Amino acid sequence: MQKAQMHVVANTCATGNVASVASNFGPESGPNDGQQLMLSSSALGLEILYESCKQVYPLQPNPLQVTAFIKYWLGGPDPLDYISMYDHPGIPELHIPPHWHYISFGLTDLHGDGRVHEPSGPEFPSGFGFELTFRLAKKSGEATPPTWPAALLQALAKYVFHTGNSFFAGDHVSWHCPLDGSDFECRLQHMLLAEDLLLPPVQGPLGSVKFLQVVAVTEEELQVSQHWNGTSVLELLRRVPSAGGPWLVADMQRQLSLFELQPSFRREVEHGIDRDGCSLSGVSARCHWEERKVTSKTGSAWRSPEAEDDSSSQDDEEDEPEAGATLGRHRPADGEPTINGEIWPIRRLYKGVHLTLNLEAASLLPVVLRGRLRHDRHFTFKAVAGETAVTLLTSRVGGALASPSAPLVAKGPWLQILVDSEWLAKLESDLACLQQPDGVVVPKTFCWFDRQMALTVVPDEL
Image (tube, rainbow, N blue to C red; front, side, top):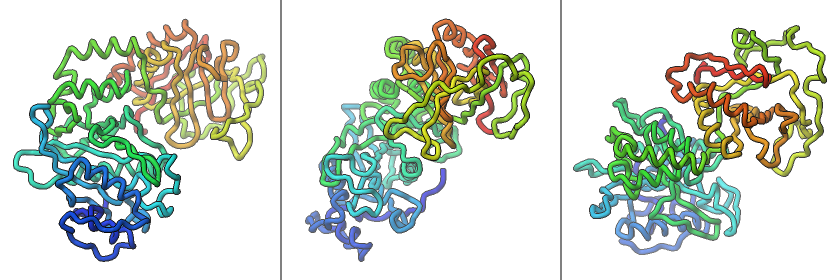
């Protein structure tokens, strides 16, 4: 994780300090003995957030804060102006331990003057519409809060600002390293997003704000969230005090997953997947596809998508309709992408398709088949870089471009693959090995000649 440039100060957005912060960083005033000063009109968003915190922590008007050295709107790298750190005593009778409560300031519009976010008005979300929170169990005798959760929230905020992608309750974040940046074998290496139970949504003059709590989870808990849904896994975590409990408090010393603590939950998960399917509709991936005839040579002739290959093969020459024959033109709806302002033609891919996915993305295919296609739902792999996308679907998915008569269809860089019931059963059998990705030797190519389809799984890092 890139270390955020920040330092810890007394709360500069609490009562008595907002005016000085909002007016180009004038001299910071000290604590005001709880007396409210007139808030600057350019800090209406700060006022709403502070008042929300005050409702929960009325006796902590000036909590410690982590703040960026140079604010984002002055050219600094960190988009969060502040992260407040509150001291919660816990509620033992409810299995809620003493903990630190971190709350971000900056994903929503704090000032209303366009310095970071476009003003939206009270009827729309403020900025991105949410702030992030985190709860960390206090160690015995710990008097000051660790600052690594603030760096974690800054890193997540950077992702949101750089990509424009928002978070929602139930979302998951694959992180693949200890959240606290430690070297010891910490098992909490991923995250789920939940509604913060103590901070309900608020409506203000600059728009609406939700508070999303970042919840630390293990690899197995992340995988179950992908296979089923994040919201259901969060509810299971709430039922086990040592796995987070009602308020989902992170204990970085936890060494057992939810399903090691409560093995009976595995049956609930299996039943839930069969009943509900999978709520995950797509992921970012190292994803590439090309129109190619699939032959017995396909596996051995695989080449990296990054490699340029302008040569043509005689295997691709055959007496059938022109490859990529146009089925029509799809006029994009509002918000759909176009290439240089042009409308993408819809092409049936007669030759066949060779799809490439990285191992982590490919390991989701058994989940996609069981939890999505078996429930007649679509699933999309979207390239991390570029506009390439691959959607798997069935004939019962409405609005599809692919059909039983044209199962492989492309619209620009977007490929749709229609999977019928017979092929679905075959895919489930052939790709079952991907449920244990550690045992898969990559690159590995799967071919379905009767479908003119090939898949090559490559390492996550080439």
